[in-house]
Length: 179
Ligand code: 5GP
Ligand code: MG
Ligand code: MG
Image (tube, rainbow, N blue to C red; front, side, top):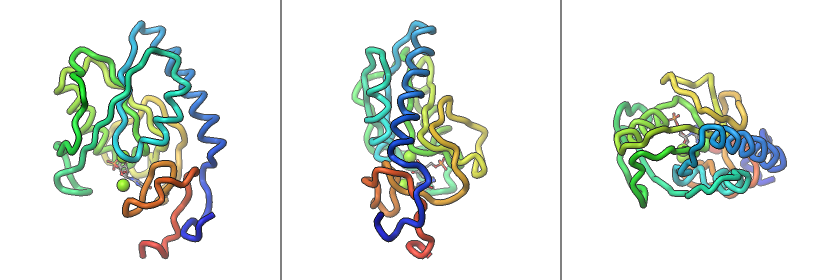
């Protein structure tokens, strides 16, 4: 374990096991509805989780990616800047949005609205992690991998200053790294 990690919160084995469960649940839910979603990953944090969970979604899905950032940093409300847009139109489509973590809920609220503005018929959200104690906006993922306490985590896609995304587990960063 690299020395910036205080402790491991969620192991790689747990993430794989949970991704299988969620993938199965998602497949059943969409099969019942009779629709096939376009799976959209939010860059860059969702990449490892999307790569894992997509293997367990037993539907003829397409995947696409989007990169957005808030106009006014952490306190932004209501608008996002699109750094990389979707390749195809989502008009009339069902979307399964893949996120790394739901924290305040601002990102998801804005991206979901953006997708509806683009004409999406339905938007569901799957997030690897959820920090419910930090929520400012009333929004929840439809599918959550793990609820975690209010601590800053890295790994499995999540970064600190763009680093540590490649760690195969979710770990708590030593506060000395950012204090
Ligand atoms: P929200 O808009 O829900 O407040 O924030 C979501 C984004 O904040 C996530 O996609 C992620 O990029 C970042 N974030 C929130 N909590 C954490 C955390 O504990 N660790 C890391 N690395 N990023 C976080
Ligand atoms: Mg994110
Ligand atoms: Mg980040």
